[in-house]
Image (cartoon, rainbow, N blue to C red; front, side):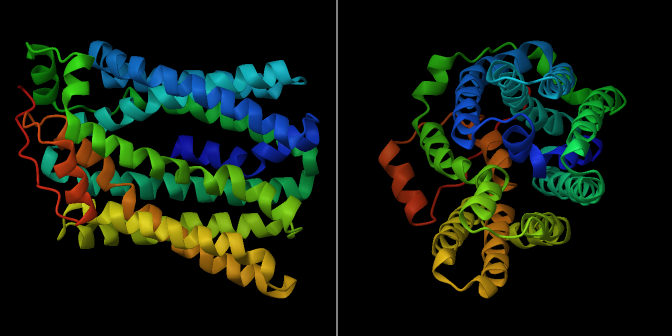
Length: 349
């Protein structure tokens, strides 16, 4: 929640900061973020190996240290070069944080409870983000664009503080012993031969593109294309975070009755419907656009609530499954919501 609050302070104004304060055109900002995202994608496989070698806690802390450093680079960025350096640092930290955080939660909680805790963790993070966004909106309304520097500085300090707090989180001793005593080291060639697992990752790659829409694409779309008021995005973003805080845990209890793949598929349909609504908002009169966008964000948020928590829990089961089925069986199973439930092995194996 500490890190999420710091992120919320900076998140609503990140694109606008580089456009209005630093003076970079929006296409150049997009190009820099794309290049940084590619660097992060290249680091992701290495990050997974580092987590296996050095442990999730150490890499989780390192990710927060790099995020804080990248935010400080943003603070002094007055050119595209420095902006790109900061973006690469933060993208690399996110690439490191994703496998580290998932593995760290797996180290803290037993397998039967992970779905619930993945959802609860998302609720707590969104609560922190909502608090940060509300504070940022108030600070920006008082201080204008000059307040962006202070928001960015506090956000960086929040990352450094979070890395320190992670040291105090207890880890299950049995999980640590199982990890240290594991004799088998799985190579990337073994992973590439696991066709059901690769098929699942391929389906998630399309959903992954949806996760950043609310943060990256929607703010400039509202302001530059729709000429919506500045408070419009704050309203929509706050609605998103509050919905996750209130609905995520109850939805996890509901989804526990069904296969995890059904929640992921339902989330995909939610994304698709929300994007159709986003794309058609320009056809409406100005007075109807904000209520229409509210409905769009509600559907988008439900898609995220359905699809995100089951994903890491299912990955943890699939990558421990020794059975290798034909790729076509996997794709047909997903299409029919009939994916066979994998039998997980013990962590020690």
